[in-house]
Length: 321
Image (cartoon, rainbow, N blue to C red; front, side, top):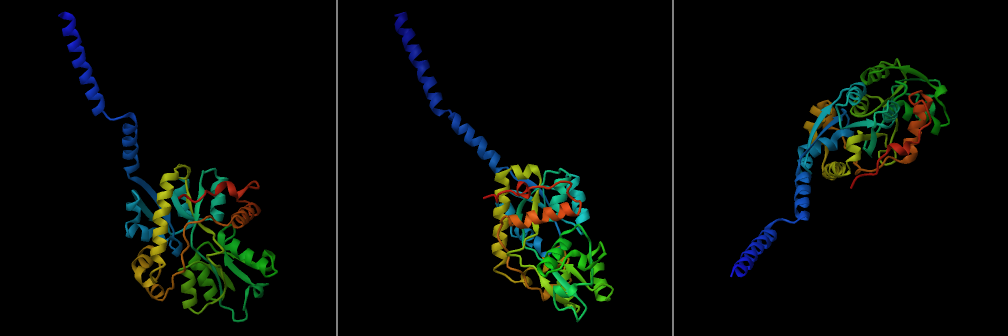
């Protein structure tokens, strides 16, 4: 009798255990639930921008909610000068920034851990107020307002080389501020200068002549640089890339008039220039041409920005997808 009662009790106990086991979530389910919770967590990114059309897709992505759609909480901070931006990068205040290939070399020299995540759509133009200067070859013996050791000067030197000249064939007038460079040329105190937009559009509106302009499709010197933490986080980088590409597709369907507020308030375009501005065709996220990046690093070595010869390919990430 006792034996029968024991077996009955044991059977009831096992039935309860089996029932509870069936109801309990599996180990894989717990892991998947935890992973899902982590993936749904919003990631905060601080991104530095510059007052140029290169930054437009980032502002459109924010305005249209593309960052939020990807679970990203993005704060955009516009810097008025590369010096201010680079100080923020050195101070660890930014996760990513609109910067350029020569500046990247300086980050490498400073061992900051930054790399290029994608090239951006940007361009330079060389302008002059001298009617006798018809092309870049005519700059021989002329003065150019610029600042050595920066990307605009790197572009100038490449243009000189393509036209059979060297850096020694022009006189460099060192002028740190871009508006001051433009003013010198307007006042005929310098023969030429190299400008990004909106200054390039301002120069042409004031009557200066453009003798050369880079093609964003083939000549990418502006990049979105990222710090080591973001560079190692491929999932977050892929989300950032997705939002960026959506913004690019959106911009290419519209005209500058649709983005007047961003152009004037965020990117520093004077209203009169913004009204007549023609947007470039924006390219989706992609790597800077390897030869371009290496040429920029070689220039940085020649200018003393880099102490040693560096293989630039180590500082460019695959485009996250």
